Image (cartoon, rainbow, N blue to C red; front, top):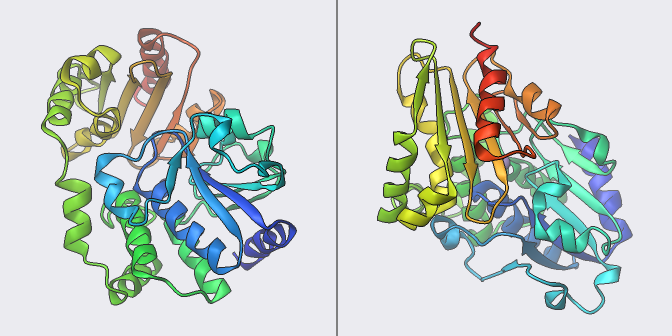
Length: 327
Ligand SMILES: [Mn+2]
C-alpha cells in the first residue's frame, strides 16, 4: 500500500490543481470518497473541485454538507485555467465510466490518476492506486489521510463512514475485515452517528422508487431451481412510476435474501441512458471475467458492462453467459 501511496504522492507533487470525479450513477462510496479526498487536497494546499456526470441521489445528499459536488454539463462550468488541472477518478478503474466528465475532460486535463478498489482491465491506466482487497474506495481514502497525517473533520468522517457502510452492505460483504471495523470505530469516535447514516441511506427511499422496484421484481425469471434470478429495469418502468433509476438499480441485491440464490442479473436502461448489464453472485461464480471479456469491470461477485445492444438482446446475451455457471 505504501508503494502505491508513493505513486500518488509523486502525482500530487506534479500539479497544484485538480478535478475530482467518480463513476456515472454515483453511489455513497464514490461520493464519500470524493468529499473526503477534496478535503485532503485542500489540506495539502491544492485547488480542487468535484465534477460528476450524474446528479447525487437523494439518499446521499446529506453527505454533501457544503454543497461541493458539481454536475458537469458543459465546458463553461470549468475554471478558466482548466488546462493546468490534473484529474482524480475515484471508485472506478474505467475512465470512460465517468460519463460526461470523461467526454468533456479527457482531452483537456493534463493527466489522470485513478484510486479504486475494483478488479478489471488496468491496461488503460498507467497512473493508479488500486487496492482490490479494500472494502471500498472510502477505506483507501481513509488510509491516505492516515499516511499524510491529516485531520478528519465530521463531514469527512461521515462521508467515509457512509461509503464504507454502503459498499460493505452494512459490514456484511466478503471484503469486510477487522481493519474495516477499526476504521469505522475511529469514524464513530469523530462523531459519526450510525443510525443517522442508516436512516439516510436505507430509510429515505421514495414511494415512486418502491413502485419502480415492484415493476422490476415483476419482470423476474427464476432459473436453475431458484439458483439464479434475472430481472429487467426498462426506461418504460422508470417513466410510468417516475421512480429513481439509481434506487431501482439496487433491486439486484434483493434475490440474495432468498435461500439458495447464487446469481442475480439485472439488465437496465434509464430514460435516454445506455443499456447496462449488472451481475451479482455468491461464492466462486466469477462475473468479473464475463464483464472484462465484454469491456466492463468489477469484482468477482459484482460486475457489469455496457453492451452495444438493445435491452432485450443484452438480456439474452448476459443470460447465456451466466447460464454457464449452472450447466
Ligand atoms: Mn466502491
